[in-house]
Length: 568
Image 1 (cartoon, one colour):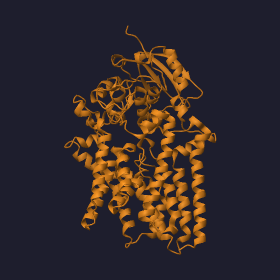
Image 2 (spheres, rainbow, N blue to C red; image 1 turned 30 degrees about the horizontal axis):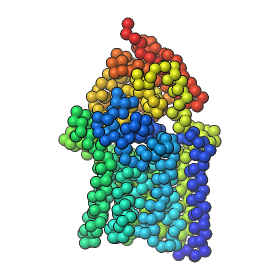
Image 3 (cartoon, one colour; image 1 turned 120 degrees about the vertical axis):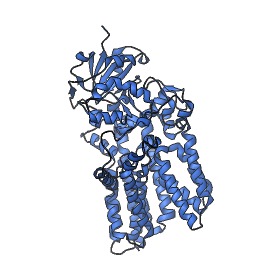
Image 4 (cartoon, helix red, strand yellow; image 1 turned 30 degrees about the vertical axis):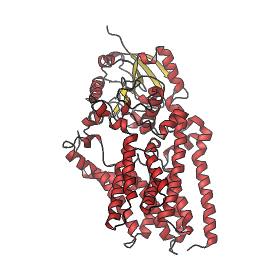
């Protein structure tokens, strides 16, 4: 065991490392202000902008399906949006979209750090000599690039885990129930409830077999599910309160053009094992694997269980498509709800495994000297994998690669567009090409297009008429729109469907020459203008007129404003 003096030095170093990492994480916000990078994929173009839409339309706490969000797709039911009973929703209302994102990110990392320290200290790494391992493992955990719209779904798991372990041990009963009751208000039911409840069921079975089961453990599990149902009741009750609503998810067919194949699944397994899932946290646990390899042996029951849990989760996620393909036509709900989100548990399990491996190494004379270097190297890898931190420092050093929040939302540019149109924004509808409709949403415009996880299937059918010519040109677009369709966008087969194709920056100087667009269908749906991030060279031939090109120094986009020609 390391000497007391050495442990004291380790703790001082740990405190210094925590302070340095905190400065690294917070410094961009202080220097760049509202010019920081926020992840685009499913955040600024989806989950986070939805909260802003509800705040703008004063529908945050609407619970009835006849309440509408008028800016989107001719007025979508409010119930297709996330719950308003969430910490993130309150933060957006109080602080605005940008500041709420920053505050929420800081808050979930503080809670995540505290939760990981508690669960490691009280249940896994109990020796006071290993305190620095606990703190640095917790720090590595909370610098992971998680999705802020999901709140505590990833980083809050240690605190939730700690609460359930308390209930099993019949200690801290009141505090633990309070954590479980509050948790659904700051996390995603879709991502967490199934994986965590399965994990809990395994724990209940384990303790029941040994006649050690606590009624509080079972009660806590029931309470968590009830909490999620109550918090998400508007969405869950959508089909009951509005029987005419048919979700587009019921028409999902993710295998229109290609059946599941083994090689693709093996590749997905490798990606999950070595990098986790991008919706969870891009995480390369290289040093953790080495530490586990050095310490894993047959007698180490818990580390072995955790290792095989990681393998099982990666396997289920990677090969889930085979079961889904075989059963989706027999059980329609398998199309609309995916049960393979167990990857959400991977960061927690990896860090628990890391802490246990380091604890073993700290008791082995030949390996003890590797503990601190392993901790610091894995921390650096995790920090470098945080795309938001990385892009902010690139911006600060003059090597910007992605738009900052200010660049992306282009408020001044859109003010110019609205001034040029000079009509009330609710008197016309727009669509976007080569840029996300979320930008128009943020700037108060009404759109026929958008990214939504749920919307009416009939609307998708109507909207398809506008882009049918483009969809029919490309098998990829047929699979993407017809087989999935969460992005109800105006697509171009010439551009494609990758992120760079639906976020065409002004630096790319892209254009299209063979665009197909049904102006009649567009006009019938109330459409009047197209906001295009690329030049449409055949615009006049298809009934579009270029009104003006808008460029702004603070914007990431060159926006070509096209109008639909009036009928002859």
